[in-house]
Length: 250
Image (cartoon, rainbow, N blue to C red):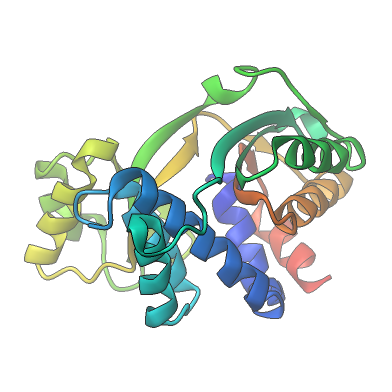
């Protein structure tokens, strides 16, 4: 299971996303604006925009705010014109590989804040390419695992899906990024209700964490997630459900 998925689950259980909704909406709007600026305002032809919009919808961001961010990116305004994508690579506790995707208008500020977050939480920044090799882009469709079984996703296999994973009460259907639309369409045509469909960065292998290492990893993710310039964080850790429940309740 990807560390990013684990972190999303922890945030949901702790209510962290609700407590910082204003900042969350600002980050989501920035991601939508930049995706629309770089690839156009059509979600069908712009996977990055489709992913950004999907995240916004999952966070209950109002439709008018989503549309305003798209309009800004496509030329109705000039906000976000100076934002750029920057990828930072580093290591967390126990050697966990961490990718930090930032959208920033100031590389120096972003780099300094992210470096400080790593150094004060048992990790450190690495050189470009130091951990990126351990991740790959995938299309991910998420389904209700209590409602559907692997038999129900056979149409997705025929459409190009590579793997089906059980993750708690969810089913995750993985594909190459170029096959995501076809997989999503095949499932919808088969009457399968989709919870989300987006591009994701998946780890090729994971490091299992418990005890202090798990706590320090979560602390690092919280600090990174709180940075204004940070868009998304991916890490190759795994935490057993029993440990996850303890962390969420703490």
